[in-house]
Amino acid sequence: MNKAVTLAIIHVMEDICIFTPTYNRAYMLEALFESLKAQTSQRFYWLIVDDGSTDETRSLVERFSSESSFRVVYVKRENGGKQRAHNTGVECCESELFFCVDSDDVLVPCAVEVILDAWEVYRANTSVAGLVGLCGRDENTPLGTRMPQGERTITFWDLYYKKGHRGDSALVYRTEILRRYPFFVAEGEKFMAEPYVYHQIDLEYTLGVVDSVFIVREYLEDGYTHNVREITKRNPIGYRILKRMYIEYSDTLYLKFYNSILYLVGCKLSGMKSGVKNAPNPIIAAFAYLPAVLLCKTVYR
Image 1 (cartoon, rainbow, N blue to C red):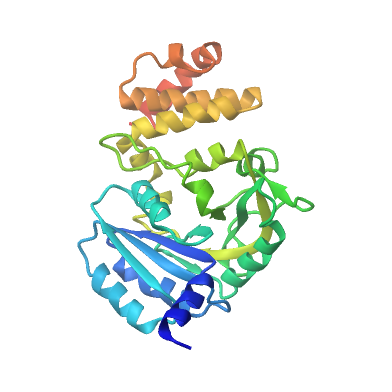
Image 2 (cartoon, helix red, strand yellow):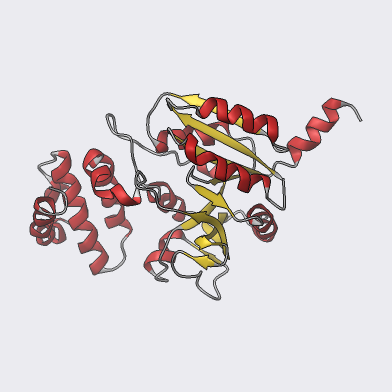
């Protein structure tokens, strides 16, 4: 068998792209790399988008590439935040499935195998955009609740707002669908929460439910979870746009009111003075105004 044929077969077997956006996280990438080497299925490749790192990320990835049995692709871009790096990753992706795994995550050993086995059940159903699984403290212990029993498919919105799911989810999407829903990131900002994309996809598609832990996650001091308020203050336009979308998607009065408060927080933080008038429901927003002012003077001061 000649080399060209061998490479073609390897490419066909890369059913899933493990995508990792990273910024000055060279000290974390080794653990993720080891978890990829330990996968029971090697039908994937690893795409790393370096969002302007100034540490030794490039040289580390070069070593990973020389040591791994799977393909490692490295893309360097100027610093623009995770969401812009995500858009770059989707544009560069060569596989059917796209699985975002952060630099501070590791995969359980059977993650790729479980994903691909589950995907065989849903692949032919064009109304299914991908799969939703669990993040855990370990491969047997979810960070929150397990997936709702008896549900084969579900939207990301319904999972949290109708079924009461708690904790982070691990999401795998068809690449072709993600290309239709890129992240918007406001000029001068670097962040937009992932549900901005996921809930738009919910309007047309569902997700296949997999009640298994794919990702073991540790929350770092420099990560989003520990810095959510500061990140919101630095990216108020994106926050405002996201919460406005949440109001439009909300199907209960409570959710409309709650998200109106957060939308108005975004309005005040971004300097938008006509938030109530421009809200999807100005009457609800009028009642939400005072709680929003209070949040701005306390939590987001």
